[in-house]
Length: 281
Image 1: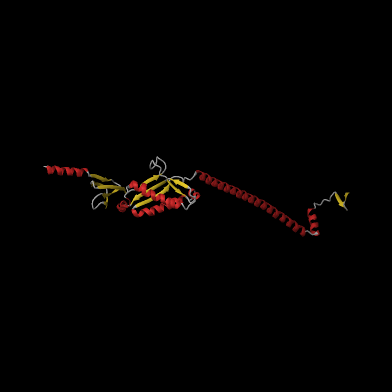
Image 2 (image 1 turned 45 degrees about the horizontal axis):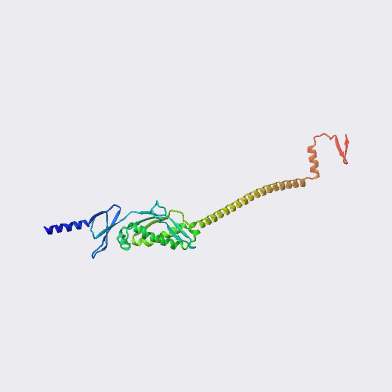
């Protein structure tokens, strides 16, 4: 009887230190042995279902779907803590930005990934991935000017960081699907004001240049129109002069007399002149 009691007690203790855990839909599990000769991560990746986990074991689950997260300084997004990224440009200017992340775990490499980092989902995203993003940001931005980062270069900055982080983590089964900027690049206020003033001056200069070009074009049009009118008048005048020269050259005394006869109506004039005077008939 005493042996039975001892057996029951031991069985209860084993059951007490054991539990039934579940791998939910959209996840896979990794079982870790804590003690013994086979302690460590089991190579088998567990699918959806229930599993007995003994006192010597732990079960870690990882999603097989895409995980989306935002690293931001805002308390109402992502974490209540400030998770913005800070980095320096080649001038040593400190900048910051909020980034959005999309990632997933490669199923066949989840066991290997856990063996490498010994981290769960939250720690992988919050420690491993964040560290790689921060390091890549500083490596890339250190070769860029603050003006370039703040303006047209922000896309190149993020694309370069995404490429570096993706290449670094992919072999371990952490797949970076996307990394994007979800806020403006934040730079020192004095530098921001100076850059905005420079942009405004450039825009004003461009506007003035456009106005000069417009005025020049309008003047050229007016000149062309005036020249066209002058040329047209000259052509008409030249034509009339040519006509007059041609007609004058063709008139002989005989033709003039003939024209007079053609025009005479048969009536003698009442007044006609002789030697510049007038005689009354």
